[in-house]
Image (cartoon, rainbow, N blue to C red; front, side, top):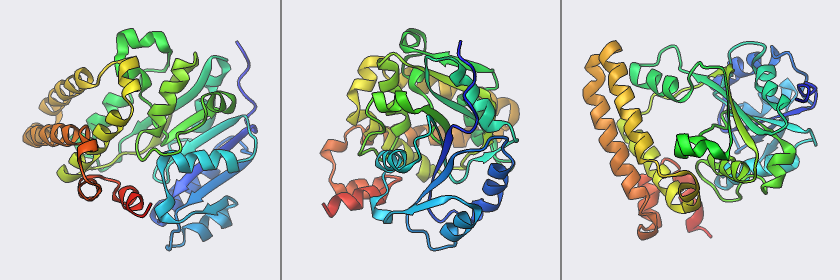
Length: 315
């Protein structure tokens, strides 16, 4: 097994848009990390709230793009090209706050295994999170140490084999480049698409539970619908992923059962809301999976990423 990577062989990449409300906590978390990155690169979507100035003062390199040009896959692809040639890339989102000074170092530990092409850390719920939000983080990001998956893991885990998140993840640059980098046009789940390509190419994916950030969202019923509409579009556009790793329905049922058990123990009055959210997710996903039949205007109305679809109208 190889040694853990040198902690100065890293570039940190953060897409931002009107991030000022998060910056005090984010910069504090970054400043306390016990690694010395070669670069902190910010790709900002023309914020007008002081984001650029604050991050520039911190010492980050800030590259601005028009908001209409932001694309989860394409923007991260651009960031990879613009970053210094560090062998390891840590990707974050503006609202993912490192929990402790060793978070980045612990995330990089997984690369001691030369087969690991990508690793992602644990995401904990916000202090004010209600039970539905807390359960989602506990279910998807359990506290169970490091888990390494490869293509063979699909026999047991199915589509869950590819689960990961760019809100707090690191990539081995050679592995990322081998699979062609992030997709140029991906408004959703660019991390899962890239993970699927890496696994198919023989790389492993690691979950490092000991490396954690605080990052969760209290989605409304309408936002749950919109988010799962986008999931449906993503799956419709990436049939190879489901063909290779398996369909998502079984995993969805397991999640619902787990959520109901958790709510029964911790917040039973939220069970009716859970049923409503499950219906919203199902309807949203079903509509999204039929996106080829929908007009762009309809997609603007239904998606959580309307700016992406508006940009399509202009092309």
